[in-house]
Amino acid sequence: MFFLDSRTTPHTVGIDLAQEMGLPHAARDVFLDDDLAAPAVAVELTKTEAVARRNGIAIAIGHPHVGTIAELRRWLPLAEAHGFRLVPVTAIRSTTMKRGPATRRIDGAIRPGGRVRSGRVPAAP
Image 1 (tube, rainbow, N blue to C red):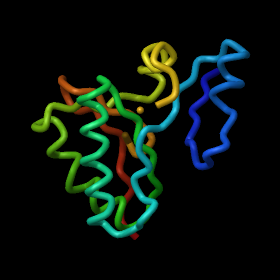
Image 2: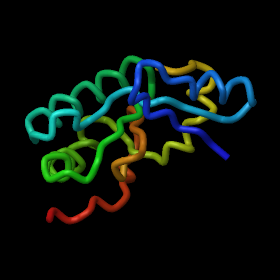
Image 3: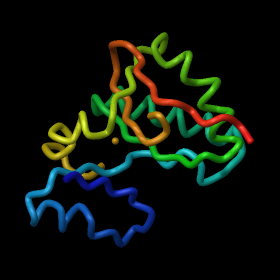
Image 4: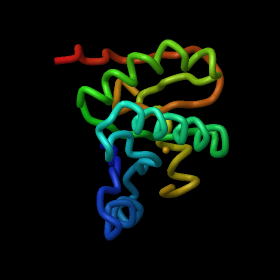
């Protein structure tokens, strides 16, 4: 079992509980689509890259909104050229456990370096 805290509230207790239970866990670093417009999602993807460069990993969470999908379709082919590799969020849990709460398919993680490994991006409606 693994717990991913989306941190949608500033009062989250998920990470604290996971730590108390000894449960592998991680927390998102960037929320991609609080603003649904594609340009705003692009800004959040840039923030995700900055977090990954600074921390070695980044977890970004988004939803299958039109703007999110459009921006991911633009960004995903460029990720490798920018030096990022997409991995399942479970692949980074031991790293995030050590660094604590802060980290794509849409619900994956990015790491600097290596090949891009993305899941399926849903078709735009």
